[in-house]
Image 1 (cartoon, rainbow, N blue to C red):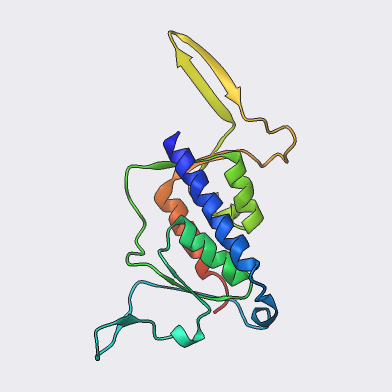
Image 2 (spheres, helix red, strand yellow; image 1 turned 180 degrees about the vertical axis):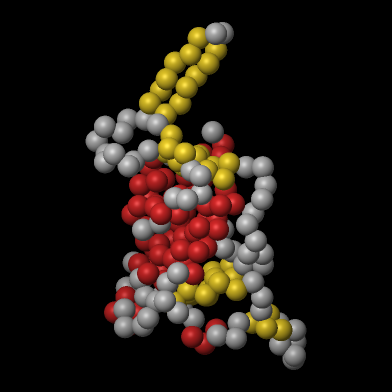
Length: 176
């Protein structure tokens, strides 16, 4: 339950950032530019003060630190809208920790809205249609109310690290 709430909060924050950025009204100039997303796990150290800086910072519209769920999804969304995005991550290896993800149907619908629904494909994700409760030898099912959605909508359960890697791949797939 806590993981679901945290993930819902992350998705809501992501959407808030996207909506806030879009509302700034800077799309006219940006639509002319080609979409680029660059993911790097290193920086150039200045010989003057040792400051970490990007070699291509003069050609970047947005710099995002952290290529996790939010950073990767935001980089893809902004890059798709024509922004030149520089996504910085200290470690691009697949996160390998004992955690799974349960993406609720509303979260999956947001992935569809952002064009990221294919990020839950080919990572051994399982479709989830509700919950089952077990107590004192009895059980009951609580299905998600999915009647008014198309047949692909359901929850998804998957390995966190594989999902992160797919989001990163999707962000990096935009033209340079």
